[in-house]
Structure formats: structure tokens, C-alpha cells
Amino acid sequence: IAFWELRYISENRADRRVGIFTDVDRKPQPTIWQQIVVESLRCVNEVEIKLSELQSPSAPAAAPTPSTPSSSSVASPPHIPMGKTENIFVQTSSRSPVRDLMAMVQSTDGGSSPAAALRQRLPLPESLSASTSQISVVDSMKNTIIPLLSSPYGKPFRQTVQRVTSGAIPNPRIPKDAITALGNMVIASLAEDEYGNVQRDVRAILESFCATLDTLKRYVANPPLHWTDTEAREAPHLVYLEEPTMLIQQLEKTLREITLAFEPFMDELGIPASLR
Image 1: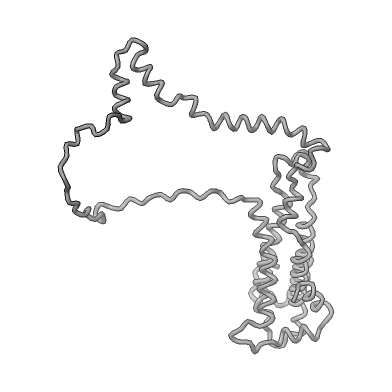
Image 2: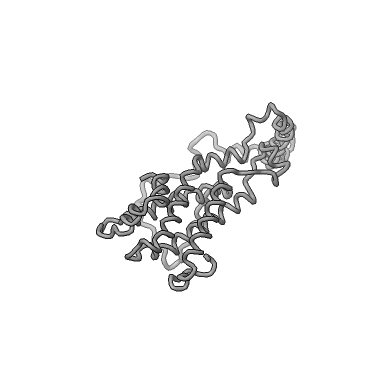
């Protein structure tokens, strides 16, 4: 069932809720309640993962460091049969890089000194700062483009944090319905779950909700601002992110309702104080 339908059942259909709670004869298949918990938390956790990726872009993987085996573990190289013996000191090619370099150094031609000729063949020190020069060029281009981006004509070209966030959470109603439905089902289970199946998952649900709430709050407090998002960079305290704010409000409401409903049973369920 869709999350909006599950939310409707959790709010208005006690008979359907009881049917979900008493569905216990599906082994080895998961029960309806177990499927609801898994899919709801997966939907909520996807939001957390996407926002975490936006705040911490994946760094390029480091090259693996080759391990140096100990001398005792190094096997002897296999015997390589020797072919026809050749004089390795005979030049097989008329030219080679080493020969050219030696000829240049040993040259006594009156044009330039051997050291000067060698310097001409070696990379110049300035070439080592090419990356620094490229960075300077990029910074210069940014300084030229920013005034245009700040004007009304530059609005379509800004990579705003609102646009990026909407791309990560394209339909916030779906995770909101999942949070609402799961919270309502947990609270209703106190009176309707005669087998006590739901109480086994209360801690995992609270942990998942709290982790997602923390991620959302960190994202809103310190959103990833692109250099083209001139308005947000000039006034970051005025940035309003609709989708995360909506989910923060729903998570806080649901967590408050669950903790109040289960307050007498928190110790019995082994729920730590950090989740209360």
C-alpha cells in the first residue's frame, strides 16, 4: 500500500490496524507490520543519506598502498632460461633518449654551454606552478561572473541551495506520510496490539527518527552553498529550505507523541535516555 493510504489507515481505520497487528502467521515471510516498518524506515533513511551526501561529497578514492612483504615471505624468482647471448653494449638503434642527452651534454659547439642546453631540455620551474595559475584564472573568472549572477539576468544560472535540496527530496510528502503513519501505528499498538509485536521495534524506530532529525537539522543549520548562489552566500541566515523544515517539524511532533505515549514503559523496553 502507498504511504498516504497507510497514513489514512493509521488515523481512521482501527479494524485495519488490528488486522495488521494480528498478522503473525506468515513465517518465514515477514509479517505486514514488519514490511511496514522496513519500507517506512527505508523511505525516511533515504532522505538522511541524500542530504549527508550533499554535505559531504565523496572524495576520490586513495590509491592503495602496496604492502612490502618481509624478506622471509618473498619467494625465489622462477628460473628464466637464457636465450641467445647478445652483446648488450652494442647500440641496437641509431638514436635513443639517453644517447641524445649525452650528446647534448658533451657537445662543445660554440652556441650555448652544455648546462644551458640541458636546462632547455628540462622542465622549467614555472611549469610546476601551472595548477596554481589555473586556480587563479578560475578565481578571476568567478569574480567577473558573480556580478552578473547577482543581477536579475543571472537568476536562471544560479545553483541555489533550494534547487539542490528539492532535487534531493523531490516529494517530501512521501517521507512525511511514512513518518506520520509509522508513529500513529506505534501509538495505536498500545491498545490494539494484543501480541506485543510492535513494542520490539519501538527502539529501532526512535533511533532511526532521531538520526534523520539530527541530519536534517545539521543540513538546515549549515547548508551546502554553491559559489553561484549569490543571494544565499550574502545572507545565509535568511535561507529557508521548505522540504527539510517540513520533515523536521513532522519528526519532532511524532517523536514527542511516541515518547509521551510510551513514557511509562521506556525502562522496560530498554530505551536509553538519549532517545526520550
